[in-house]
Length: 246
Ligand code: AP5
Ligand code: MG
Image 1 (cartoon, rainbow, N blue to C red):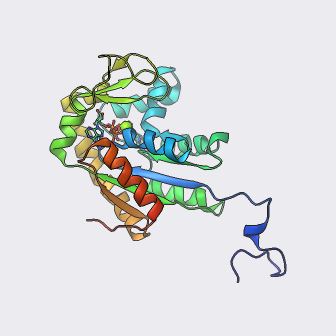
Image 2 (tube, helix red, strand yellow):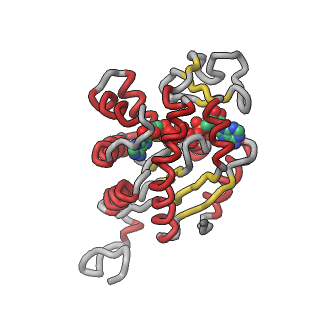
Image 3 (tube, protein in one colour):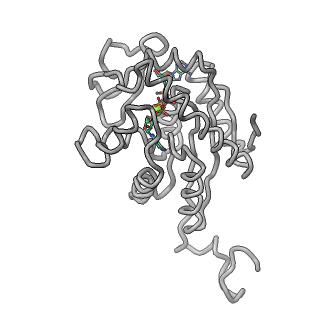
């Protein structure tokens, strides 16, 4: 069957049909805790005019609003464990159905297990869509520990990210972007950082393998200044050539 034609083969070419929605651009940011997913996703989202959808930010916002979702997520987050797949997939599916995601989204921290990746692939396939690219920010463990122990996050809706040593705010304790107070995340205590790395790196590598096999993975060295990582990510997106890793 010719792709893009209607069932009887005589109809208009689907891509020229003005009523057919353009497939969304879905970019996934993958990386260990502290790799810079949030920092980069905010910049890439701005550059591409797409919303930044971060699973961790959504859980923290639900917790701050004292919603059942937030209270359930906290039980796992405080131990450095992953929130169960069904809860997480439902939350992201709802978020992707919001009007601001009609052109696509930058997904930060989702999917984090192969089950989540398959659920996302299936969700998109129902609309004849697929993931556009998976951007893996590679950072060594020593650097991750250094970054997470000095991180401060703003209390505004966007949860902008700073670092007391590596990326300090202009005024200590205040977000440069929206002026809200900065705070440290409860899961940035050394014990919880260790648990996050131990529990979350193995499933992350499985997700990387999943997208590597689908030819969608792009690996970017993350141990360079923020601006250089952003430039490398944007260059990879516009080149569109996957780079195999591991
Ligand atoms: P989440 O909020 O996603 O946390 P995470 O994956 O542990 O990642 P982080 O937010 O800690 O790091 P990041 O990569 O965003 O780095 P950042 O840009 O902040 O998830 C929290 C929890 O929610 C999880 O532990 C889990 O329980 C649950 N959860 C979330 N998603 C889930 C899912 N899909 N399934 C199940 N459970 C889920 O940068 C870190 C620091 O480094 C900052 O201080 C920053 O200023 C600095 N920095 C960044 N880039 C650079 C650079 N190039 N040079 C120098 N410093 C830099
Ligand atoms: Mg983050």
